[in-house]
Length: 374
Image (tube, rainbow, N blue to C red; front, side, top):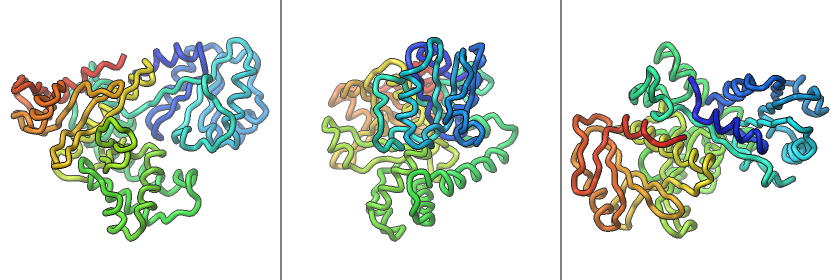
């Protein structure tokens, strides 16, 4: 199945290095190798492979290489300095594609600056916009239960998908976390992870979670940051024109794999919507250079709207998720009327689309599939 970034990756490779980052097993290596077929001489090197590591250290790829793919290079000591060196001294015609599972900005501990030498592309799980016009078009139930990672989504059975998920989450927490912190309480980290699964869709108090786990709020904050860096979870903060104030308020935590959500009600549907909107905002940032963010709205008296799409520090649309309720949410109506925000209520199961009291009530599958990502 084609990925959205393919055409823009090919364009950007003619200009600078390209960093392709995202969760493990989301399809980065497959996409990199697929792009490699477009060039006559492609070299793929994975830093986890001992033989490849020697080639990387000696810069021993053949002259005339058209595309050099470096996978997991962020595990190399002084990887920034290394990339700067090969980019600045590359021969004409050499293109460089760098892939990595962890966020390279988090793993960066100083060193040489790569500013101005690369374009970043973030590859995320499949979403409704990416499976449109395929046999899976509109199948939100499959996306919610299996998640958007290629193997479980495209696999034969739901049982195989669940077996994949159990191994995936366990391996990430037990092994990949060591890239960030050698001394860690794995039991407390696992409890943090499990509590987050149960609290999707609700503002998370790290202090409250810390009391439940028996650690300090600082420790919970650190663990959530590690889970974010590993692309297991992402946070959405309440919108505020004051960025610092927004970051201090309680965030909502969502999962890149919707199948991990263990909260009741429509939490998986809300998580899928959050992931789709995040993918849209990141795609617009990576492809068009636009300043975009995803937030939620919450007032001091508790009035809340699930999501706010923000462009250049101004809200361009507010969005509420419902599993079957076709009557517009009263908070959505209130925010739309008071501030003039365009408002949409996305309904998972909806017979007829309407506009009521200034709120568009839309079928979630078709609306999310129509998010512009090109």
